[in-house]
Length: 232
View: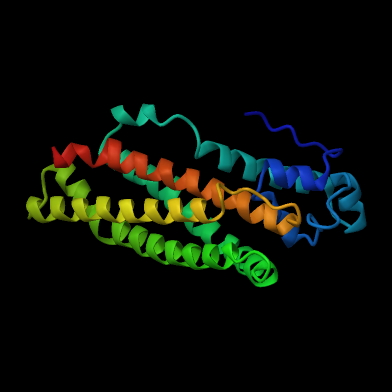
């Protein structure tokens, strides 16, 4: 993908193309919801912002977002230390940031629209369960299991059987995280938007779907490339 955002791009279209752009707009008090039908240049002028700085921020977010979706086949030939460091930098940190930034939007949509769209109440519940579990899971990986895997890779693990048992536990946790994401997709009817969906509503669905993709890529690297080296 190529970064195609320009000063003439409509604010709402930018968020549709790069959902995480909403964080930049929110920080700079650019209305991407009800007032998103204006060019970025006009929004910058209205808010006294430097257009070039905004474009640069958008490009950085775009490149960071795009990099998580690149083909991961190259990692099959990488050593375990490199894969682990890549997972932490590109998936753990990115997931932590997205879970934090997305949370208030999910809560707001459920609160504002939940009465007429009860599926949003369930979506909100599932999201926070997923958030809690994934954050705990990633912390366990970084603090306990990844160091053990590096020891396995180096042949210095004091108790290889225990390390392998913990890897097996991680796979089970991955299965449950995937099930929660499937439930979110089911309750939202594959992120199908109702006619009355506002900009924030659309944003939440777009970013939840992106979070799903990010998580699946994250799990793929571990379940299908890293872990089999020690479970076979």
